[in-house]
Amino acid sequence: MSVNLKKVKKFNHSYGNSLKESISVLYLVLIYIFVIMQDGATLRKIIHIDMDAFYASVEQLDNPELVGKPIAVGGNELRGVVAAASYEARKFGVRSALSSVLAKRYCPELIFIKPRFDRYKEISNQIRNIFYEYTDLVEPLSLDEAYLDVTQNKKGNPSATLLAQEIRQRIFIETGLKASAGISINKFVAKVASDFNKPNGQKTVSPVEVGPFLEKLPISKFYGVGNVTREKMYLLGIFNGYDLKYKSLDFLIKHFGKSGTFFYNVIRGIHDSEVKPDRIAKSVAAEHTFNINLTSEIFMVERLKVIADQLEKRLTKHKIAGKTITLKIKYSDFSQQTRSKTMAYYISDKSLLLETAKELLFQEKPKNSVRLLGISLSNLNTEIKKAVVVQLKFEF
Image (cartoon, rainbow, N blue to C red):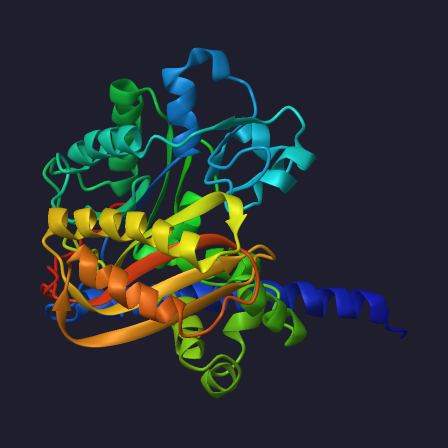
Protein backbone atom coordinates (compact mmCIF):
# COMPACT_ATOMS: atom_id res chain seq x y z
CA MET A 1 0.00 0.00 0.00
CA SER A 2 1.41 3.39 -0.99
CA VAL A 3 0.99 6.50 1.14
CA ASN A 4 0.31 9.91 -0.39
CA LEU A 5 2.74 12.05 1.64
CA LYS A 6 1.26 15.31 0.31
CA LYS A 7 -2.17 14.38 1.65
CA VAL A 8 -0.70 13.34 5.00
CA LYS A 9 1.15 16.66 5.32
CA LYS A 10 -1.95 18.59 4.28
CA PHE A 11 -4.05 16.72 6.86
CA ASN A 12 -1.50 17.26 9.61
CA HIS A 13 -1.20 20.97 8.81
CA SER A 14 -4.96 21.48 8.65
CA TYR A 15 -5.74 19.39 11.70
CA GLY A 16 -2.86 20.91 13.65
CA ASN A 17 -4.00 24.47 12.99
CA SER A 18 -7.63 23.78 13.87
CA LEU A 19 -6.54 21.91 17.00
CA LYS A 20 -4.39 24.85 18.11
CA GLU A 21 -7.28 27.25 17.51
CA SER A 22 -9.66 24.99 19.46
CA ILE A 23 -7.21 24.76 22.34
CA SER A 24 -6.83 28.56 22.37
CA VAL A 25 -10.61 29.05 22.54
CA LEU A 26 -10.99 26.35 25.20
CA TYR A 27 -8.16 27.91 27.20
CA LEU A 28 -9.93 31.30 27.21
CA VAL A 29 -13.29 29.74 28.09
CA LEU A 30 -11.76 27.93 31.08
CA ILE A 31 -10.07 31.14 32.27
CA TYR A 32 -13.35 33.00 31.83
CA ILE A 33 -15.29 30.41 33.87
CA PHE A 34 -12.57 30.31 36.53
CA VAL A 35 -12.50 34.09 36.92
CA ILE A 36 -16.25 34.54 37.24
CA MET A 37 -16.44 31.78 39.85
CA GLN A 38 -13.94 33.52 42.10
CA ASP A 39 -15.51 35.42 44.97
CA GLY A 40 -15.19 39.12 44.23
CA ALA A 41 -13.29 38.62 40.94
CA THR A 42 -14.25 40.90 38.09
CA LEU A 43 -14.19 41.15 34.34
CA ARG A 44 -15.30 44.31 32.68
CA LYS A 45 -17.11 45.71 29.66
CA ILE A 46 -15.04 48.47 28.14
CA ILE A 47 -15.95 50.73 25.21
CA HIS A 48 -13.30 52.76 23.42
CA ILE A 49 -14.85 55.64 21.47
CA ASP A 50 -12.66 57.26 18.81
CA MET A 51 -13.96 60.19 16.77
CA ASP A 52 -13.30 59.86 13.04
CA ALA A 53 -10.76 62.46 11.76
CA PHE A 54 -12.06 64.73 14.52
CA TYR A 55 -10.35 68.08 13.87
CA ALA A 56 -10.78 67.80 10.10
CA SER A 57 -14.41 66.67 10.47
CA VAL A 58 -15.21 69.67 12.68
CA GLU A 59 -13.78 71.99 10.02
CA GLN A 60 -15.89 70.30 7.33
CA LEU A 61 -18.93 70.48 9.59
CA ASP A 62 -18.52 74.22 10.15
CA ASN A 63 -17.60 74.97 6.55
CA PRO A 64 -19.64 72.82 4.10
CA GLU A 65 -17.45 74.04 1.22
CA LEU A 66 -14.68 71.80 2.61
CA VAL A 67 -16.82 68.64 2.53
CA GLY A 68 -15.35 66.04 0.19
CA LYS A 69 -12.05 67.92 -0.16
CA PRO A 70 -8.60 66.90 1.13
CA ILE A 71 -7.81 69.10 4.12
CA ALA A 72 -5.08 69.18 6.74
CA VAL A 73 -5.45 70.89 10.09
CA GLY A 74 -2.18 72.48 11.20
CA GLY A 75 0.89 73.61 9.31
CA ASN A 76 0.97 75.43 5.99
CA GLU A 77 2.49 74.97 2.56
CA LEU A 78 5.92 76.17 3.71
CA ARG A 79 6.42 74.55 7.12
CA GLY A 80 4.81 72.97 10.16
CA VAL A 81 3.30 69.61 10.96
CA VAL A 82 -0.11 68.15 10.13
CA ALA A 83 -2.21 67.74 13.29
CA ALA A 84 -5.09 65.95 11.54
CA ALA A 85 -6.14 65.01 8.01
CA SER A 86 -9.51 64.38 6.42
CA TYR A 87 -10.18 60.93 4.95
CA GLU A 88 -10.00 62.51 1.48
CA ALA A 89 -6.40 63.59 2.28
CA ARG A 90 -5.49 60.25 3.85
CA LYS A 91 -6.03 58.54 0.50
CA PHE A 92 -2.89 60.36 -0.65
CA GLY A 93 -0.84 59.31 2.38
CA VAL A 94 -1.37 62.51 4.38
CA ARG A 95 -1.56 61.77 8.10
CA SER A 96 -1.03 63.39 11.48
CA ALA A 97 2.59 64.21 12.45
CA LEU A 98 3.59 64.40 8.77
CA SER A 99 5.62 67.41 7.67
CA SER A 100 3.31 69.83 5.87
CA VAL A 101 5.83 70.16 3.05
CA LEU A 102 5.66 66.41 2.44
CA ALA A 103 1.88 66.47 2.82
CA LYS A 104 1.59 69.05 0.05
CA ARG A 105 3.90 67.00 -2.12
CA TYR A 106 1.76 63.88 -1.59
CA CYS A 107 -1.46 65.80 -2.25
CA PRO A 108 -1.02 68.97 -4.38
CA GLU A 109 -4.71 69.88 -3.88
CA LEU A 110 -4.38 69.77 -0.09
CA ILE A 111 -6.07 72.64 1.79
CA PHE A 112 -4.39 73.74 5.04
CA ILE A 113 -6.65 74.91 7.87
CA LYS A 114 -5.50 76.75 10.99
CA PRO A 115 -6.47 74.77 14.13
CA ARG A 116 -9.31 76.09 16.31
CA PHE A 117 -8.75 74.27 19.57
CA ASP A 118 -11.40 76.21 21.45
CA ARG A 119 -13.98 74.91 18.99
CA TYR A 120 -12.65 71.34 19.20
CA LYS A 121 -12.77 71.52 22.99
CA GLU A 122 -16.34 72.84 22.88
CA ILE A 123 -17.55 69.87 20.82
CA SER A 124 -15.41 67.44 22.84
CA ASN A 125 -17.18 68.59 26.04
CA GLN A 126 -20.53 68.11 24.32
CA ILE A 127 -19.56 64.54 23.44
CA ARG A 128 -18.30 63.82 26.97
CA ASN A 129 -21.62 64.97 28.38
CA ILE A 130 -23.23 62.23 26.29
CA PHE A 131 -20.80 59.69 27.78
CA TYR A 132 -21.72 60.75 31.31
CA GLU A 133 -25.37 59.93 30.64
CA TYR A 134 -24.29 56.29 30.40
CA THR A 135 -21.54 55.97 33.02
CA ASP A 136 -19.42 58.05 35.36
CA LEU A 137 -16.42 55.86 34.55
CA VAL A 138 -15.12 57.88 31.60
CA GLU A 139 -11.39 58.26 30.94
CA PRO A 140 -10.65 60.84 28.24
CA LEU A 141 -7.39 60.17 26.40
CA SER A 142 -7.58 63.34 24.30
CA LEU A 143 -10.23 65.63 22.84
CA ASP A 144 -11.32 62.93 20.39
CA GLU A 145 -11.16 59.62 22.24
CA ALA A 146 -12.11 58.08 25.58
CA TYR A 147 -12.63 54.82 27.44
CA LEU A 148 -15.99 54.05 29.05
CA ASP A 149 -16.55 51.29 31.60
CA VAL A 150 -20.19 50.25 31.11
CA THR A 151 -20.09 47.10 33.22
CA GLN A 152 -22.63 48.80 35.42
CA ASN A 153 -24.27 51.65 33.56
CA LYS A 154 -26.98 54.23 34.09
CA LYS A 155 -29.20 52.76 31.38
CA GLY A 156 -29.33 49.32 32.97
CA ASN A 157 -28.46 47.81 29.57
CA PRO A 158 -26.39 44.60 29.86
CA SER A 159 -25.19 44.82 26.22
CA ALA A 160 -22.07 46.93 25.73
CA THR A 161 -22.47 46.46 21.97
CA LEU A 162 -25.93 48.06 21.94
CA LEU A 163 -24.75 50.85 24.23
CA ALA A 164 -21.85 51.66 21.87
CA GLN A 165 -24.28 51.79 18.92
CA GLU A 166 -26.59 54.11 20.83
CA ILE A 167 -23.76 56.40 21.96
CA ARG A 168 -22.39 56.68 18.41
CA GLN A 169 -25.87 57.46 17.07
CA ARG A 170 -26.40 60.15 19.69
CA ILE A 171 -23.03 61.74 18.91
CA PHE A 172 -24.02 61.96 15.25
CA ILE A 173 -27.51 63.33 15.94
CA GLU A 174 -26.32 65.93 18.45
CA THR A 175 -23.04 67.04 16.81
CA GLY A 176 -23.21 65.89 13.19
CA LEU A 177 -19.91 63.98 13.66
CA LYS A 178 -19.16 60.28 13.24
CA ALA A 179 -17.39 58.02 15.72
CA SER A 180 -16.03 54.48 15.78
CA ALA A 181 -15.99 52.12 18.75
CA GLY A 182 -14.28 49.02 20.07
CA ILE A 183 -15.92 46.88 22.75
CA SER A 184 -14.21 44.19 24.82
CA ILE A 185 -13.12 42.99 28.25
CA ASN A 186 -10.23 45.43 28.72
CA LYS A 187 -8.84 48.74 27.48
CA PHE A 188 -6.15 47.22 25.27
CA VAL A 189 -8.45 45.00 23.21
CA ALA A 190 -11.17 47.68 23.05
CA LYS A 191 -8.70 50.26 21.66
CA VAL A 192 -7.35 47.86 19.04
CA ALA A 193 -10.91 46.88 18.07
CA SER A 194 -12.04 50.50 17.60
CA ASP A 195 -9.65 50.81 14.66
CA PHE A 196 -11.06 47.75 12.89
CA ASN A 197 -14.17 49.14 11.21
CA LYS A 198 -13.22 52.81 10.82
CA PRO A 199 -14.69 55.12 9.83
CA ASN A 200 -18.17 55.12 11.39
CA GLY A 201 -18.14 51.51 12.57
CA GLN A 202 -17.60 49.35 15.61
CA LYS A 203 -16.29 45.94 16.55
CA THR A 204 -17.07 43.79 19.57
CA VAL A 205 -14.56 41.21 20.82
CA SER A 206 -16.32 39.01 23.37
CA PRO A 207 -14.37 37.17 26.11
CA VAL A 208 -14.11 33.91 24.15
CA GLU A 209 -13.05 35.74 20.99
CA VAL A 210 -10.15 37.63 22.54
CA GLY A 211 -7.55 34.88 21.98
CA PRO A 212 -8.26 34.17 18.29
CA PHE A 213 -8.70 37.90 17.59
CA LEU A 214 -5.29 38.82 19.02
CA GLU A 215 -3.49 35.83 17.50
CA LYS A 216 -4.54 36.83 13.96
CA LEU A 217 -3.68 40.49 14.51
CA PRO A 218 -0.60 41.86 12.68
CA ILE A 219 1.94 43.03 15.22
CA SER A 220 1.83 46.52 13.69
CA LYS A 221 -1.81 46.79 14.86
CA PHE A 222 -0.90 46.20 18.52
CA TYR A 223 -1.42 49.39 20.51
CA GLY A 224 1.95 50.37 22.00
CA VAL A 225 4.07 48.83 19.25
CA GLY A 226 5.80 51.71 17.47
CA ASN A 227 8.01 51.64 14.40
CA VAL A 228 11.23 50.77 16.25
CA THR A 229 9.63 47.96 18.29
CA ARG A 230 7.83 46.62 15.22
CA GLU A 231 11.06 46.34 13.23
CA LYS A 232 12.77 44.64 16.17
CA MET A 233 9.92 42.13 16.42
CA TYR A 234 10.16 41.41 12.70
CA LEU A 235 13.85 40.60 13.12
CA LEU A 236 12.90 38.20 15.92
CA GLY A 237 10.32 36.46 13.74
CA ILE A 238 7.29 38.06 15.40
CA PHE A 239 4.84 39.17 12.73
CA ASN A 240 1.47 38.65 14.41
CA GLY A 241 -0.14 37.86 17.73
CA TYR A 242 0.28 34.12 17.23
CA ASP A 243 4.06 34.52 16.89
CA LEU A 244 4.12 36.73 19.98
CA LYS A 245 2.06 34.29 22.07
CA TYR A 246 4.54 31.48 21.60
CA LYS A 247 7.53 33.46 22.82
CA SER A 248 8.38 32.84 26.46
CA LEU A 249 8.22 35.51 29.13
CA ASP A 250 12.00 35.29 29.62
CA PHE A 251 12.56 35.76 25.88
CA LEU A 252 10.34 38.85 25.74
CA ILE A 253 11.89 40.43 28.85
CA LYS A 254 15.37 39.77 27.46
CA HIS A 255 14.59 41.61 24.23
CA PHE A 256 12.06 44.23 25.35
CA GLY A 257 12.71 44.81 29.05
CA LYS A 258 9.65 45.76 31.12
CA SER A 259 7.58 45.97 27.95
CA GLY A 260 8.18 42.25 27.51
CA THR A 261 5.89 41.52 30.47
CA PHE A 262 3.24 43.80 28.97
CA PHE A 263 3.40 42.00 25.60
CA TYR A 264 3.32 38.58 27.31
CA ASN A 265 0.15 39.51 29.19
CA VAL A 266 -1.84 41.39 26.55
CA ILE A 267 -1.52 38.62 23.97
CA ARG A 268 -3.21 36.40 26.58
CA GLY A 269 -6.02 38.90 27.04
CA ILE A 270 -4.64 40.16 30.35
CA HIS A 271 -4.67 43.93 30.84
CA ASP A 272 -5.76 45.04 34.29
CA SER A 273 -5.59 48.80 33.78
CA GLU A 274 -8.88 50.27 34.98
CA VAL A 275 -10.83 53.13 33.46
CA LYS A 276 -9.71 56.14 35.49
CA PRO A 277 -12.22 59.00 35.51
CA ASP A 278 -9.74 61.30 37.24
CA ARG A 279 -6.80 60.54 35.01
CA ILE A 280 -3.96 62.74 36.23
CA ALA A 281 -1.80 64.57 33.71
CA LYS A 282 1.89 63.82 34.18
CA SER A 283 3.01 67.09 32.62
CA VAL A 284 1.72 70.39 31.24
CA ALA A 285 3.41 71.99 28.23
CA ALA A 286 3.32 74.81 25.72
CA GLU A 287 5.32 75.00 22.51
CA HIS A 288 5.53 77.04 19.30
CA THR A 289 6.66 76.13 15.77
CA PHE A 290 8.10 79.18 14.03
CA ASN A 291 7.41 80.36 10.49
CA ILE A 292 11.10 81.18 10.09
CA ASN A 293 13.89 79.19 11.75
CA LEU A 294 15.61 81.06 14.59
CA THR A 295 19.40 81.41 14.62
CA SER A 296 19.80 84.07 17.30
CA GLU A 297 19.46 83.20 20.99
CA ILE A 298 18.09 86.71 21.56
CA PHE A 299 15.09 85.89 19.37
CA MET A 300 14.75 82.50 21.09
CA VAL A 301 14.48 84.20 24.48
CA GLU A 302 11.77 86.51 23.11
CA ARG A 303 9.78 83.46 21.98
CA LEU A 304 10.32 81.73 25.32
CA LYS A 305 8.67 84.70 27.07
CA VAL A 306 5.47 84.10 25.08
CA ILE A 307 5.61 80.33 25.70
CA ALA A 308 6.17 80.79 29.47
CA ASP A 309 3.21 83.14 29.62
CA GLN A 310 0.99 80.62 27.83
CA LEU A 311 2.16 77.80 30.11
CA GLU A 312 1.47 79.87 33.24
CA LYS A 313 -2.12 80.45 32.07
CA ARG A 314 -2.66 76.71 31.63
CA LEU A 315 -1.18 75.95 35.05
CA THR A 316 -3.27 78.64 36.74
CA LYS A 317 -6.46 77.46 35.07
CA HIS A 318 -6.00 73.92 36.40
CA LYS A 319 -4.37 74.95 39.71
CA ILE A 320 -1.23 72.95 38.96
CA ALA A 321 2.40 73.47 39.93
CA GLY A 322 5.47 71.33 39.34
CA LYS A 323 9.13 70.89 40.12
CA THR A 324 10.74 69.73 36.85
CA ILE A 325 11.10 72.20 33.96
CA THR A 326 12.01 70.78 30.55
CA LEU A 327 13.09 72.82 27.55
CA LYS A 328 12.33 71.22 24.18
CA ILE A 329 14.32 72.28 21.12
CA LYS A 330 13.57 71.03 17.61
CA TYR A 331 16.12 71.96 14.97
CA SER A 332 15.68 72.71 11.27
CA ASP A 333 16.85 69.17 10.41
CA PHE A 334 13.98 67.85 12.61
CA SER A 335 16.36 66.46 15.24
CA GLN A 336 15.18 67.13 18.78
CA GLN A 337 16.85 67.87 22.10
CA THR A 338 15.49 68.25 25.66
CA ARG A 339 17.16 69.77 28.72
CA SER A 340 15.66 69.53 32.20
CA LYS A 341 16.11 70.91 35.69
CA THR A 342 14.33 69.85 38.89
CA MET A 343 13.66 72.47 41.57
CA ALA A 344 13.46 71.90 45.32
CA TYR A 345 9.97 73.43 45.38
CA TYR A 346 6.83 73.66 43.23
CA ILE A 347 6.58 76.50 40.75
CA SER A 348 3.99 77.81 38.29
CA ASP A 349 4.99 81.47 37.92
CA LYS A 350 5.99 82.54 34.40
CA SER A 351 9.02 84.48 35.60
CA LEU A 352 10.51 81.37 37.21
CA LEU A 353 9.56 79.25 34.22
CA LEU A 354 11.25 81.72 31.88
CA GLU A 355 14.42 82.11 33.96
CA THR A 356 14.86 78.35 34.19
CA ALA A 357 14.16 77.89 30.48
CA LYS A 358 16.77 80.55 29.66
CA GLU A 359 19.28 78.83 31.92
CA LEU A 360 18.65 75.55 30.08
CA LEU A 361 18.90 77.29 26.69
CA PHE A 362 22.31 78.78 27.52
CA GLN A 363 23.67 75.49 28.89
CA GLU A 364 24.86 74.65 25.40
CA LYS A 365 24.90 76.57 22.14
CA PRO A 366 22.13 75.34 19.76
CA LYS A 367 23.71 73.04 17.18
CA ASN A 368 21.55 74.34 14.33
CA SER A 369 18.81 76.83 13.51
CA VAL A 370 15.68 76.23 15.61
CA ARG A 371 12.17 75.56 14.22
CA LEU A 372 10.38 74.84 17.53
CA LEU A 373 10.73 75.69 21.22
CA GLY A 374 8.68 74.32 24.08
CA ILE A 375 8.55 74.42 27.87
CA SER A 376 6.95 71.67 29.94
CA LEU A 377 6.44 71.25 33.67
CA SER A 378 6.32 67.79 35.25
CA ASN A 379 6.70 66.23 38.71
CA LEU A 380 3.37 67.90 39.45
CA ASN A 381 1.55 68.53 42.72
CA THR A 382 -1.56 66.66 41.59
CA GLU A 383 -2.78 63.83 43.79
CA ILE A 384 -3.35 60.30 42.54
CA LYS A 385 -6.92 59.24 43.16
CA LYS A 386 -8.15 55.74 43.80
CA ALA A 387 -9.74 53.97 40.86
CA VAL A 388 -13.23 52.51 41.15
CA VAL A 389 -13.74 48.75 40.72
CA VAL A 390 -17.03 47.46 39.31
CA GLN A 391 -18.41 44.01 38.54
CA LEU A 392 -19.35 42.28 35.32
CA LYS A 393 -22.57 40.97 33.84
CA PHE A 394 -21.88 38.72 30.87
CA GLU A 395 -23.94 39.84 27.88
CA PHE A 396 -21.83 41.50 25.19
